[in-house]
Amino acid sequence: MPWFENGDCVMKQHIEHRIKKQDSKPELVPIKTVWGEAKAWETLAGLRPKDVCLGAAAAYDEASRVYTIKAFGIDFFLSLDTKTITSEDPKSVLFLERYKDFFRLAVLWYMTSAKEIPASGRLIRPLDVKGGQRFFSGTHVLPLDRIEQRFGLDKTGFIEQGLKFGSEIASYGDVAIRLYPLPRVPVTIILWLQDEEYPARAGLFFDSTVDFQLSLSDIVWSVAMMTTLVMGE
Image (tube, rainbow, N blue to C red):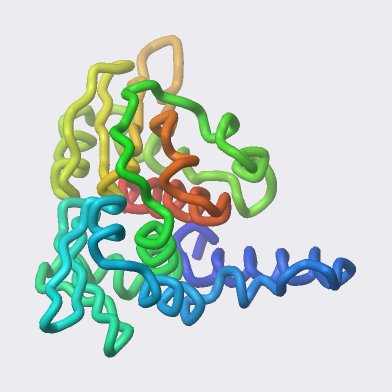
């Protein structure tokens, strides 16, 4: 099975790599503390719900202590008491099970850091994001070839796949969609279709405000990887 079909494996390899890299730097906070889900829940619980909702474009029910957030067109519920993320949408299984290591951390850390800043509409490459060099090395490389192979001759199928996950149609390339893996983090995927002269080519782009919404570069990478995998399903 190709590495990019197993989100859990990729994330574990990534975390192990970061831990090894930091072993020689004892002054740094261990990655499990910075990155861990428990730390994210603790941070979220310590924030004022009003501030979280404004920043993350989420909703909060005070009685149940549950946040509601829309991701990929799906409503997810984050319970502060049980520390669980659930959804009633059948499509949520993809995110809560197969890609849970990408999704859970991305949602939780987004909730703690997102700001009430509207998208600029200006697209930037992953390389231009803080820490973006990682997108072009080893297991961090986004499997955009999977999208190219599946939809290189299928413009309609590409659009339909995006619409399944709440996308908007955008005006770039031969065909493009804008997905919302998180409410204030639009991700645009542009596809240039295969023709007699050139093979298909796909590109992923963030809005220029992404660094304001996601404070950890690891989470930016997770969102990009998850979005690419979803479109290649």
